Structures are given as C-alpha cells and as structure tokens.
Amino acid sequence: MITADLLNSIFHSALPPYVLGKMALGETVTVRLRASAELAIYKVLLRCTPEGEEIMLPLHKTSERAGVQWWETEVTLNVPQFDYRFWVFTADGPYWLAAGGCTRYTPLDYTNFKLLCLHHLPDWVLGSVFYQIFPDRFCNGDDSLSVKNGEYFVGKDAVEKWEWHQFCGAKARNHVFLGGDIPGIISRLDYLQELGVTAIYLNPIFTAPSNHKYDVADYYHVDPHLGGDAALIDLRRELSRRGMRLVLDIVPNHCGNQNAWFKAAQRSLHAPEADFFTFRRHPNEYECWLGVDTLPRLNYANQLLRERMYEGEQAIMRYWLRPPFSIDGWRIDVANMLGRRGRHQLGHKVGRAMRRAVKEENSEAWILGEHFFDGTSHLQGDELDATMNYRGFTVPLLQWLCGRNFEAFKAEATGQQRPNADYSYLPTADFVQQLNQFRAAVPERVAIGQFNLLDSHDTPRFYSMVRKDLELFKLALVFLFTYPGVPCIYYGDEIGMEGGGDPDCRRPMEWDRQMWNQEVWEFYRLLIGLRRSSPALQQGSLQFIHHDCGVVYLRETEGERWLIALNRGRDSVNQSAESRAGSEKWADVCVLSAGIADGTRWQELFTSHEEAVHNCCLAAMPRGVGAAMWREITANVE
Image 1 (cartoon, rainbow, N blue to C red):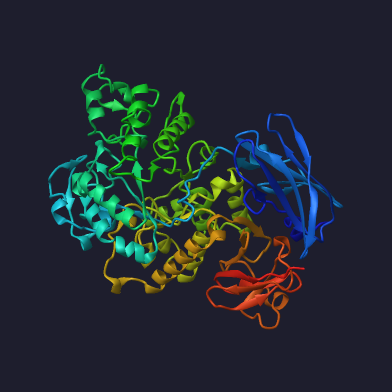
Image 2: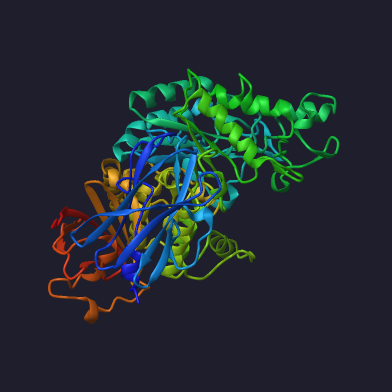
C-alpha cells in the first residue's frame, strides 16, 4: 500500500520548471512530472482532449537523482486552452493526477491542468503589492474641498462633515464625511513607498452623493469633493514618477438615483436611457441593488448601455484608461451580479466584452472583479484577470484561525442572528482541501494572479477578528504574502488598526506614529520586501505537504525554494515522537513528497536558525502558535 507521503510525491504544476517553453499557439512545450524515487512507477501517460477525442501521450523517464524521479513528454499547443492530466501506473495500481490532486477514480475535466495560449497577465501584476484606500477616510489634504454640513442630501439624510477623530462606528453612515481626498493621497505617497507598496486600488472616486460613492451620479468626472479630474491627473503623474500603479473602482451593475441616465428614464419611457433600467411601475418602482432604492440596476440587454459603458469609442471603461488619467486597471464592483437579471443571464457575455474593450485600449491593463462566492467560472483566461479572493483565500483562513466566518462576526457585533453565520473551526485537512479546490478550478497562470486579502471596506478588520492576537495575525500575514496570488493591504492594517463591520471598518487612518503598533508595521515591511524580491513567492508553483499538525507548503521556481509552516495552535504536536536533539523549538515535517533530499540545508527567516533534512524530515514546524519561513540555502545533489 502506498503511503500518503509517497502518493503526494507525484507532483506537477502548470508553471516552470514543470512546463518549459513558450505559451503560444503552435509552440511545443515540455511537460514534466516529479515523484519520489522510492515509488515504483512503470508507466505514465498524459491524457488530453484538444479536439474532443481522448489522446494518450506516453511520458519517458529522464532521470533519477537526489531521491527524485522525473518523467516528461512534449506537447504541441494547437488549441487556445490545452487541458490535460496524468495517468500514473504504480505497483499499487494506476492513479490519476489532476490539479485537484491524486485519485484512483477518474476526475472531472474541470480539474485538469490548463495551459493558456492566448491569455496575457499584465507583466507588472505579479510583482505588485497592492494597498486599498477608501478615499474619504485616508487623508485630508485640502480641507476646502470637504462637504459642508447640510450642503445636500444622501437619501433622506443631510450630509455631515465630522472632524477626523470624531468618528463613531455605526453612526458614521453614508452621509457622514471626514474629508479625505486625492490631494491627501498624494501627500502620503512617500509613506506608501516607505512601506513598500507598488500599486494602489481606490474605492470609487466618481461624482456621487455618498461617502462610499457606489451611487455614481457621473461616470465621466471625479467628485469635486475629492479634488476633481485635475487631482486625479496629479495623482497619476506622481504615481508614475514613483513607478507605482493605479486601479480604480467602477460600478457597472448599478448607478445612483441622481445619475442623469436614471433621471432621464424617470422623466420619460421614450428617453434613450429608459431601457437602461427595469421599471416595474414607472417612474418610482424599479429593480435596484439588494432593494436599495438609491441604487437602480442597469440592464445590459440594452445595446446603447453596452456602448456607453464599454463597447463604444468613448465608453467609460475606455475613457479613463487613456491619457491624461492612464489608469492601470479596473476593479469591477459586484461582478457576481453583473448582467444577471431574471431571464437575461448575460454575466459572462458582458464580462468577456468588457475584457475585449479594456485590452484593446491597453493590453497591460488589469481587470479585477469583486466576488464573495465562487468566481472560478469568470477566471478561465477570457474574462476577469482576478477576483477578490474571499472564498478561495480569506474565508477559509478566517474559519481555520478563528472558527468564525464574516457573518458570525457581524452577528456577534450586532446581537442579531444571521442564518449564514458559522461558528465552527475548519479542520486543517479541510482548510487545505478548500484552498486546493478553488485553485484547481482555474488555470494556474490565472491563480498566481489572484487578488488575496485579509479584509476590506466590506468586512471587519482582520486584527479585530483575531481579537488582537499578534501571533495569529502574523501567521495570517505570512500566509498572505507567501500563498499564490497578489497581496493587498487594506489601509491601516499595517499599523494594527481595528474595526468591526461596515462602517466601523472604515475608520479614519491614524497618522500619529505614536499610536501605531510598531511591531506590526515592521513585520509588514519585512514581508513586503521579501515578496517583492522573491520569484518563487511571486510566481512559483505550490505544493501542500502532508502534515497533520498544521499547514506546510512549498513554493518553488528554478533556483529558489521556500518551505512555509503554519501552526494555529489547535493541532497537536507530539513532542516525544517528533522532536530530536537540537529541535526543541521545531517539530519534524516529512518532506519526502516535496522531493527534498537528505542533507539539504534550510534557514528560517525570522530566527536565522538552520536545519538539514535527515531521514526525509526537516524540523520546520513551530511548536507553538506561529509561522516559519524556511529558505533553501544548499541543495544535496547526487
């Protein structure tokens, strides 16, 4: 019977060094599979169906050294998306290897490995560290721009201007402004550079009544209270001077009830914009976002709307990509709902057309979608470049560490029951399985560009969710900066800011350094610097290593390997069984499945402690709550 470690040693990634060659139609690439030399393998086949019929290509064994055997074959990329999996014949019987792992049963095709020949992920994305800014709450750079008390209404509430430190949680609803603006962001760019940030994502800045500005009144102008169009041009110039990128938030699913399109539609059903909306009874009963009457939904069955939003020469999504604004990408609000209304289920059609328009304007522009659920169908290389990876990253991490999902935290904060609140800890094996399932459902080249985050303007702050447990928070940060995907920091997290659900999570940024958690700040800077300098952490393959006392995974590129070990403190570590001389602080991890040879030496980042692999084990797992990052420093090559 094959042990779990031997079975897990059968490994492939759709990234180098497991796929070598140019990803383009008509090109031939080398596909490689790795396994432990201890595993008796007598045949390997690559199964693909490029034109619908099954084809089996034999792999040949190329080498066996340092305890590892390698098999490979060549394939010609004759279709835009080349899907494949392996059939591995062992002395214990045949196993299938797909992106979802090794199985004796035939896996579904959607879990196949995927090579994309036509997809292009902008070159700048993988090396980026993002910083999310809610403009009204980040920095007041010009108080003369701020709203005046009673200046206008947001719904039934007259706007209020509060002082920066007057903020008070649940009372700070959509009509309350603190005066943050684009000049304020410009004034803090040196701070962001000091932190190590390379790209910023701004919540909506277009003209709108509310502080959050998801109720857009004018898609073609920056809100004057944020500084207007001129301020955005200044921001673009200053970011470019620093080599930093800019992504803006667009709201194509709905607009605000003060939008000129909606007002025209209300005035007359004969207006060109009337069919932009769905009226149940004209003019005051209409489809809106989640029943919020200030946010009427847009109807993408209408051709004129599609032209104005993304298809036409002067379309909104094209306009802001051009000089003098030259933004680097879009974050699409509620991408999960976009184009989906009753019998009109146009979500993917709209998403693909948006992609075509954006990429026509700038092939290096990036398209991010908000999706709190399973967004993998939008991530097949022809639609979104990434989603905000809540379900494939944030939610499982939260439940693994805290035994709560977002809804549970909101219920505890408000005292109100929520039917979708979950108060259970996610077992470690299930945590890894959920991560794997979400990654297996998308091409790996897309997965390494996913947008990973601990929290946002829509969630409680992570530091509050771990109840200010610094070791758990640090563990989460290590995961954020070492797991495949592009990391994003929500403003203020780097100084230990707290906050509950919306609007408490939108507290004003604290600029008094005496109030910062300096340990958190320095930890962020360390991890950001590491992430920016490491090819393996930016775009290396991922392999989870079988371990029942925490989470262990390998990030690997040619010439660089990192072993990450995470102990949440709820999984037992048997000291007498797993410790050996000189390893009182670390528990052994079997690294047989990772193809790591005995004698290979590793150094831990935070302690500078060194260990060597012995009898297929490395003393790598912290014995208490925490994270360890081990970098290979010498390889044992036979």
